[in-house]
Amino acid sequence: METKTKNSIQLLTAIPGPKSQEVLARRVAALPAGAARSTDVVVDSARGAVIKDVDGNTLLDFAGGIGMINVGHSPSNVVNAVKRQLDKFIHTCQIVTTMEAPIQLAELLNRIAPGDFAKKTLLCNSGSEAVENAINIAKYYTQRPAVIVFEGAYHGRTHLTLSLTSKYNLFKKGFGSMVSDIYRLPAPNMYRVPEGMSAQKYLDYCIARIDEALISQVDPSAVAAILIEPVLGEGGFIPVPAPFLQKLRDVADQHGIVLILMKSNVAWGVRETLGL
Figure 1 (spheres, rainbow, N blue to C red):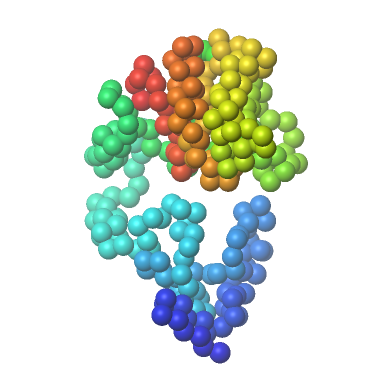
Figure 2 (cartoon, rainbow, N blue to C red; figure 1 turned 90 degrees about the vertical axis):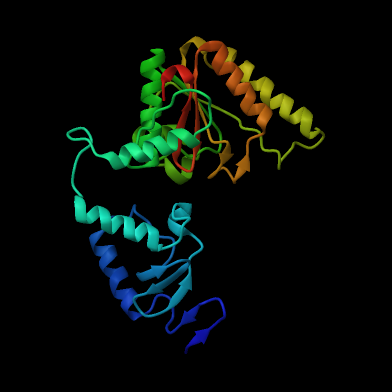
C-alpha cells in the first residue's frame, strides 16, 4: 500500500522491503556483526534530507551520518568540487608529495579556530585518530604519562580511545585490560543537581573535586593532558558549565598540562606553546 505525506515520505513497501532484505542478508554474510546498524534502510540514492531506498521508498534522514553531513546529501557545490578534483588526481600522499587543497583547508581551519596565536591543523581519517594524535603530542611535549578524562565521555574505539571512553558495558565489555595512567573524574550534570543542593553549590563542589583528585588520584606533575567534551555526547548531550571549563584551563596553565577539547569527534589541543 502506498502512503504519501507532504514531507516527501513515500512508502511503497514495508521497511525493509524485499530488495532491502536481500542486501541486508548479504551484509550479514559479508560484514562483521560488530559493525552494527541502527536501521534496516538500504540506501539507493539521497538528496538533501531525503533518502530513497532500493525498494523505491523515500524517507527523511534525521541522522545524517551521525551528525556529520550537515550540508545534506549530494549538495551541488560539494559534488562539483569532488568532480573537479577527480579530473585532476585522486591518489596522492601528503608525506610523499605536496598538494594545495589540504593546505587551503588547514589555513581555513586555523583562521576559524579560537585563539590569538599561530595554529596548525592535523588532518586525520577519524575522530579516534585525532584524539590519539592529540594525546600522543601532549605526552611527547610534556614527557608525562597520565591523562585525565571525565565520566560519561566518548572518545573512540581504538585501544587508547576506548580506554579513554567512559561507558563500560556499552563499549568496553569483553575487551580485557585497557591503557594505564588514565584518571576519570565526574563531570557536572546541571540537569541532575543532587537533592538539597543549589545549582551553584553543586557546581562549586564539582570544581573543588578537581583539586582533590590532583591530590588523591594523580599528581599534576604526572599529567600530560586533560581531555573533555565541552558538550558531553554519549553522556547525554550535557553542556559543561563555563566555570568548570575555566577551572580546567587554570589548572592546565598552572601545571603545564595540555587541555584538549573534543567536539564532534575532533580533538583541539588548546595550548599555545604546542604550536597547534
